[in-house]
Image 1 (cartoon, one colour):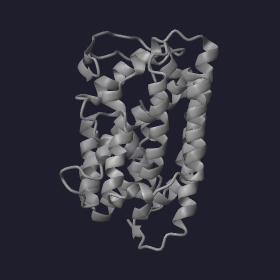
Image 2: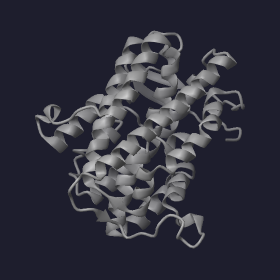
Image 3: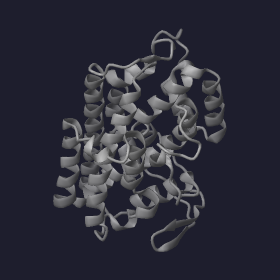
Image 4: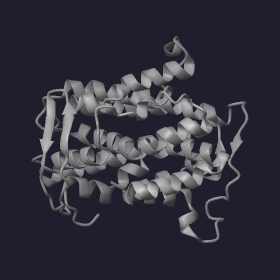
Length: 314
């Protein structure tokens, strides 16, 4: 990422009232946000090429995996937000404490109730791969809280970037209620401008007084977070082999069989939507929505990748 001007963020509601930030930053290579982007590039590309993700890119989708993905997210966010609450006054995390704006575990609980019914808690459990992720989050929260920054930034900023595209597409593709049931996870009611909030969050993170050794530890932890996500993807891929239900095949060309035109790659279009602003995002969304099966592919695939691809592109 090249040098970038910070835009006026206006006012953002948080637990204490309004946050007013108006500043202009020139990003430097040793800023934490820049180090995280550069340091996770390789593992990001590996995540893109997991079998689970490649199957989505081929258009082979099982609806049950969407629900299981939400279950994994529920346990992940519950653990992360427990540790955030434990460390909300820690000097390295307090500037990034936005519970009203960002916390997701309650929204995920509402989604799981919609998908599984009022007794959803008796029907779901934490998988082995997710449990390893959860255990690591609890470990850093209790032993080295500064590392929570890497986990929070990776997840929340990715959700703000990719999740907002998903919401409307998923409602249409999966015939979910227009009132938002089943997609509460992607609704950030207390954030009026995702772009402004992300700028504020990055700015506050870059202002943390961290030495280079600690910044590198955060990069290493972010890489580990990607690896945990890949393990969850691999686990979902294995689970998919045991699910006896109709496979929704979008009938799209296999990645690599698109005549060499990168603009036709679904992952490339997601990148462009994340980096080129709302105009391009709308253009891509409209193109996908003209193809009924493409609606399902885009919605479900974006659910899997929102926390990874969008994070790297910020």
